[in-house]
Length: 244
Length: 325
Image (tube, rainbow over all chains, first blue to last red; front, side, top):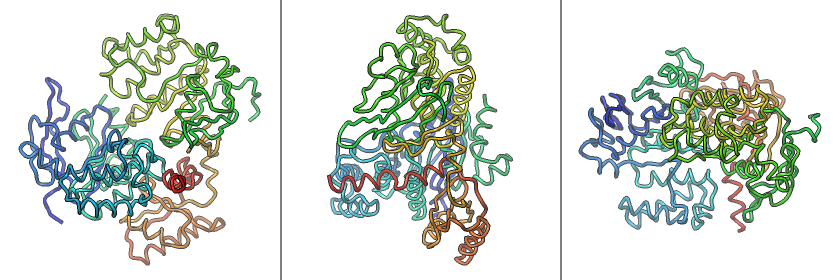
């Protein structure tokens, strides 16, 4: 395990005209950590994630992801990270196998690697029988687990998960989190957003963004103790209300 | 429940809907009382949206019958529509129209005006009025949902069907939205609402748990939570993930899964007391070298009851379905 943080962010700022969407945000995420990136709608989470995934240039500050600088190496970042969102992840009109093959091709994996990793992934997920089913025909819960595995196909050092479990049943949601723990245990760094506040408690550390800034940062236990609240849900609501 | 079916707000009799070989609704029956805040709680793909479309008279059932406000949802749809407020899932407004234009539009569709509805929508509209000229598409998630609720109320309906009004909305806006629903209920409105968030069940008078087109139970949230039929323990350990895997290997485990900051554990013995099970689980984990072990009785929630009732998750059942298709 390396001592350089997998995500290292210092005073990162993004302005749109006179509006500062992300305002001098500073945090780091260790290798193999599961980091919950929380905030109300409009607090600046999406803008921050777009900068960290190399999709949007910051206005000022500095940040690196998997050792690559977000200002100068955004293309390197895109190749080094995995990304999965609840809104879009897999092509519904392609089969499970075709989706895996497509992503493998995008990330320049050899045909042999794609074949090996496809077999292993399908076996791990218990999806061998569905390899040739269209993605639109398989249940949402599977789709999300498959999308996560596909996001890890090229063995990224860091994976960004944007509301990965929205609308998923409570058992599948927990199975999904076990995949996250498993990936983290093998050294992958995970940054995850969620509206399920109980999932915030599953993270090693969390940050809560309010109006473009990080208003709280720490382990769930530390934050509950320091702010004297019974749950992260209560802390979230309190911080967001204070900002109004 | 003793409410006479004739005075019930909604009566559903074995409603079924098929789009293909697998039913979206596999014969659901329930009664919703006038003035009730009634929730359908369950994951995506469970049939919530299909059910709401049928009750809101915008989709025909394949079989079965439903009455809303004493009227048949198929035969009497034109008489029924002006009396129903329906907020479709996701964002159902016109993003390129302003807040005020959206409201005016929905009022005009029902042959009314904002002024006529003002008293009824005031508690919600007062929070939106400052943004009258803003395009609906440029509102925050929480504000969009408030506007959609306002538009569903503008023709002064007698019953509201709100399909996943809080999905994708942050925790603060969700609380505010439920506070608004609580106020509407106090003013006498019958509200039928669906949600994938189990914790929101406690805001309802009664809930139906819905999964794969079937109801897993209908009751007050307190009764549903209390139906969890064995001692439930919250297990804390420094390495929670490894503790989870270790407990899963124990022959005494009935179920164990992450729950908030702890693991929820239920023992295979139904009769053992919580204290004796807690002592055994502690010994089990400590003997396997786990640090920071703390085990204490936990109060089951609606989510625990849902997990216990749903059996195999979505994927595992579909898997056997697909095996022979």
